[in-house]
Structure formats: C-alpha cells, structure tokens
Image (tube, rainbow, N blue to C red; front, side, top):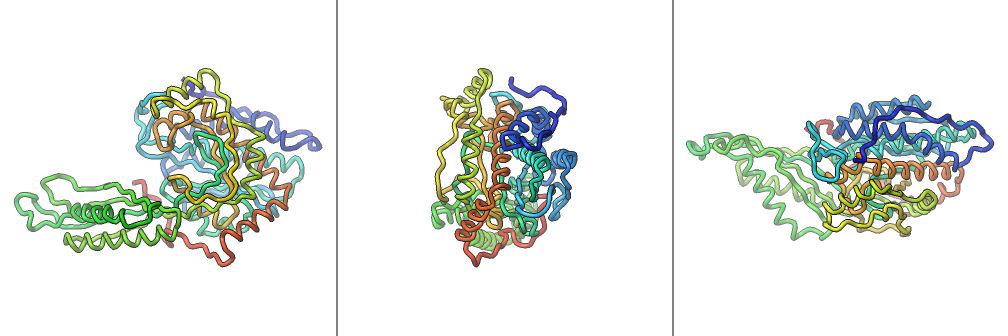
Length: 478
C-alpha cells in the first residue's frame, strides 16, 4: 500500500540569501515544500470533484496562493470555480495553468486491483489533482525567487475548471483573460516523461434532446411518438456517416436518457455526442452533418429535438522554441526513481492492463525530443488547445502512473493516489519552475517563440470558439 500518510502543512524557510539565489535554489525549494503540496494533491484526490463542481479543490488552491502573496480573483469568466492568481507587474507575463476536475464513474482506491471507493462516484483518472497542486507549487517557488532577486515581470496562475468535457479554458480565452500573456505553461499526468510535441484533436460536444408523445406501449401505441426512436434513428444515421468522414475523425455518443419504463412510449430521450478531428474545420463540418441527422430523425419519427452545445476545443498549436527550452529543463531534472514497493505496485498495475507489465524503470527516462509539430497527435482533446492559439504555449507529460497505464482508467486513479503519482508531480513542478525562471531571464527566447507562433498561426488568424457564445455549461455533468 503506497497511500501517503497524513502529514502536517510545514514549509521550509523561503530564500534567505538574495545574492546566492539561482534556479537550483528554486528546484531545491520545491523539494523542501514537497510534503505540503503532496497533502494538497491528496486532498483533491480524495474529494474527486467533477467539472464546474470543484468547489473545495479550487478554494484550497486559491487559499494557498493567497497565503503566498498572490492577488486572487475568483469566479472569472462566469465560472464559480475558475480563478486567476497574479504576482508582480510589467513584462514579461508568464502564465501557469492548473486543473483540478475529476471524471465521473471511475471511483477507485489506491490499490493495484479494481476496488471502488465506498461511496465514491468519481475519480482522478486523468491526474488533475496532481496538475493543480504541482502547478501551484511551481508558481509559488518562482514567486519567492522573484521576490528574493527583485525579478521584474508578472506571474499568473490560471485556475481552470472542467477540462474534462466542460471546455473551461475556452471561456477564459473567449473572455480575453489571456490577452497580454507572453507565454503559457502547462503539464499533465501520464505514464512517461516527454515534452508535448504532437497536436491534439479538436472536439465539439453537445446533448441532443428529443421530445415525443407518451402513450401506452401496448394499449395505444399508435398515439405515441417515441423520443427514443428519434435518438436511435439519429444514432443509426451517424453510424452510417462514419464511412464518409475523414479517417482521422472520431464520433462518440452515449444515450443519457432513454425512457422510464418499457410499457410507456418515451416522451423524452437524450443522447450526448462528441465529434473529434485533428482539424477544427473538419469538426465544424461533421458536427453540422450530425445536426442534420438529428433533424432527419425527428422528421421521420414525428418528434422534435433541441441541441445544446456543451463544449468545443481547438487542436493544440505546438511551439518548438518553447519545447526545446522545456526539454532542456526536463533533462536536467530527470525522471522518477521507484522504491522496491513502488516498483512492485507498478508491475501489478501493468499486469492488469497488458498481462505482462512494461518495465517500471522507464519512468526514470526522458523521451528524446522530437522537433516540429506532428499533426497525428494522441487520441484525446484538451482545452489547452484554445490557449495555444492565442498565446505561445508549451507543456509536458510526467510519469505519475505506472508505465503503460492508460488515462481515464481505474489504474490511473489508483496510481495517482500513491507516492508514485506524487513523485511525478514533483518532477513536473521542477520542470515548470525551471522553465519559468529561464523565460524571465531570456527575453530573446520569448521573442523567438512569438515569431514562431505568428508564423504557424497565420498573421490573419482570428480566434472563434467552437462552442459559440453560449455561457459556461455549469450543469453539463448533471
């Protein structure tokens, strides 16, 4: 059992000798404060609050930042659990992103076999408890360095709710809250150590709600018009469509409401759709076709429908200049070294996924740097994509899970609740902090990153959110 024991919130003394303060001192500071941030991460892991409902998780991170001397503005962009914490003034302006939402349906204890937590309904299957705590830890260490050295510039922490399907960062971008930011940094939990140099999938999501006429399914079926028939007809057409969209397109759906009883013709039914592609333009095109399928389904079944777009994110725009800088810091920090107990835990987790576990030692390796954006990306989507189209952005993945562990799995929840996950968070915090210190001292790198950003994005680019002008879908998890 590798679960972290209860520990006190004790912090080592901050920097004392201004003349001797350098980047290595910042990294040492992260090691010194590790117990306090481990406890923060584990509290958020325990709470496992889902998108736009991360009340306690957001409040805890805000309180830590206020205590450290940041000015915190809460409830930004119409999202009660979003916040911006700022320190310093003037240029450059460096932003660090933090997430903290969990996923529904993946409750799990911190053990290497499937075991749901009593009373649990959600779990941190994407490691956002580590993402939030580690980002705040790195920012506070950099803030202390800025204060000790008199470093000019502004450091901001963006508290970003509802990454999992709620598109929280899109509302921050749309509200102009990244205006004036020079560089944005982020990281993510993972099963390996690497700089994110592959794009992600653009994504649009929404709920199609069909309304029909209830009737006795046996006594008066001719009087009914089944809303579930509308959903099923729409799904059938969407499935036929799969042959006639680009190969890289993904279409997913779940029926969230299908009626209440078999002997009652359903008067209401709902289906929740995602459309993904490496290109946001293809997402827009396919989504429009999905809406036409819903129209046809309603017409053919004598029902009506409404659609609510609940999310939409751009693909990632990769910045090679920033990637190389972050990789240099990653290489200097190094990966994770497991204890014998952690190694055995990793092997047990790996066997549940593959039957034969990948070598746990790979958690100590840093993947070689791959220059230039690759369009194929991974299979997932992220609202960091929207940030990357308005600000030069760079991120990394740190080995917080046993090698080979897939995201959004009970195995990821289990690993994230152990010292293995916390060690990976410590690595990520150091890489973020080291990269941030470099950026404050290297204006030429920021200039080069901006030039690359404009070149890749296009000088005429104008940002437009895939989810339109709707307010935040605060109830999308209800």
